[in-house]
Length: 590
Image (cartoon, rainbow, N blue to C red; front, side, top):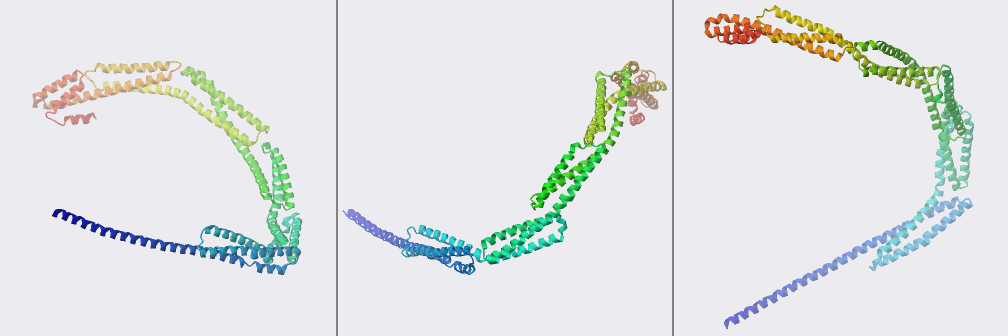
């Protein structure tokens, strides 16, 4: 029973604590909510104030721009115009400008003013719905009215400042005009018959200056504008005329005609001297040049200078090119004459060589085994030479008949010269082949004598040292060398000689003779050294039986013809008492 009461008390205590906790939580949440509401209210208030300030500033700016339009100096400029109105046209313009300004001031400005007032009231009442669009409309209206006012002011000022502006421009034009007149008068002779046209043009400019003064007195500013523009164009053109006409006259009246005359005179002289200048087409081109110059002179006479300088310079450049071509033709003739002399000597020399070859071709074929290809090469060279000679003679005929210019003849002669040089190269190669055959025959005979002398030396060397015996292999080598010499003689006696076979026989005989020469010298040296070693070793026979027996064996080998073994045996036994014997023998052998 007590346990149950205790349990109930616990439950009541927990419920009381939970209630207290819940009351605290509600209080905290409520506090946060109140603070949040206050913060939102403050922020919204600040934003509205800021928005009102922004819109208010925009309205004030529009009002400022409206006031600037209203204060434009159109009225003061109209007062200036009113003072200078002297004709109906100017009166009409003045009335039009006055009317337009009244519309801007009394109508359009008032409309803008009403729109700005509406915006101001809406901003004060916090009526911001569609406020941006309404401001944009006012801005557009302000812009259009401002443009109208600025355009009106500009039109009026074109009249109010015209007097000062145009007089300043004309003053500069007059100064430029006087300089041109002075330049023209100082060098009047340079302008030839164009001087009269220039004077008329200068008089026209002076009349335009007078027209300017009359229009300025009447305040006819529209006409003044055209006069000033015309004066500027005319004086600018006259500046070009004053500068360029003397040069144009110099080119068209003196330099070019003189150059044409020089070319025509030179052409006649060169035709007489035998030059062909048809490729330059001088007569037609000079006639065309004269026509073009005449057209340009007509343009200059009316002071139409467009492209005149360029065209005259082009004509002069062409004439200079023609003169250069004529000079090249003169130089080409000199070069041609010099090259013809050299070419003539060259082709005659080559012809003589080929003629001599074909005179001896039969005897050469009898002497040497010439191949058909080699003979065919020489025949082709002969035909090519005839072709070159034919073209050369035709070229000389063209020169005599004046059918070609020397510049073309020089190129053709150069081409033929290159062909002849190539032919000479081929001919040299062919001659080398024939010449090498003769050289090979002569060299074979010389080497045959050398080989015979070599065999004689071998025989003398053998006889100079009395060998006890000569081995059979030596006589075999001697026989082979003699047979090789006989084969050389056989090849040399053949008609025609086959050079390739002859060279092979000579090489074989030379190798065999050199081999025999080496064998002879080695055998004699070895036998001599063996004999010397045995004689030297006799002093040591009493020292030991081995030495005595070894030397006896060496003597036996020596008399049998085994000279190399005899030498080695004697050295081996002597080394038992004299270790330097081998070095001594080697030094003697070397």
